[in-house]
Image (cartoon, rainbow, N blue to C red; front, side, top):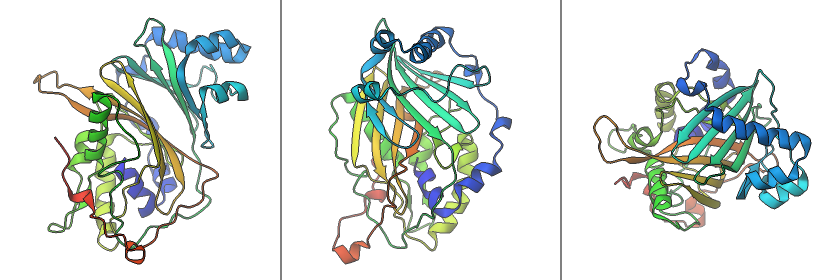
Length: 330
């Protein structure tokens, strides 16, 4: 995630997205989705079309949320009262991808720059839909601005306004903190991104999605493309890249998956909703102790958000320690 935010400031994501031909990049075997999950998903879509309120009520998770492409977060009750409908239907030309994380299933529908993520919880006998997050790719109609001074990272490097209610949530959060620890090494002058590389999942060719970029290239290509440009930008600019968190909720899905939603205000850019799955992975070849990874990520920018301005900490007297260079990894 860290690299995505820096890239927003360093160059036009729109140009970057156009420079990658996503259709030429290979996908993994999960391009043949599990028919069981597709059946219940298809039934739910038909229920929306037919206004079958009983089926919808029985299928949506009790804590279901829906983030629409304009950046409005609708809880379960409000989404039903508003009569929201999925922006992609059952058309034959819609691309469907599924990734499985224990009792959690990520299902994505996409076509022509429109992406919808469905998070299914099948930890009980009847699968429940926990979240829908929508992204419609578009060009920015404004210019983001990057601070030229240091912005200390306390949130999220030390804490966010949220309390873990389970061990899995705590470990998933620590994994994300480790991922966010990328910082400019004062000795080498290069970006230490070991945490980011270590904590981003790629075993199913996962591709993050956001409003101003659409679907990202594969992890290896993102690292190789972004890092030289980021290091060059850091030579003349501050390191205030890490995006804080204003609000967050987390849900355990079975024993090995955690889903969360965060409201994050990008420095010099608009605020967005981040919807993510964290999963616990064990190396099957070595049987090593497992690690928590960020496996899926959708960023839906809020249309009505202002550009989030920043103030030089020297002006406000903010003398908090920058914790980006504190290694929080286990």
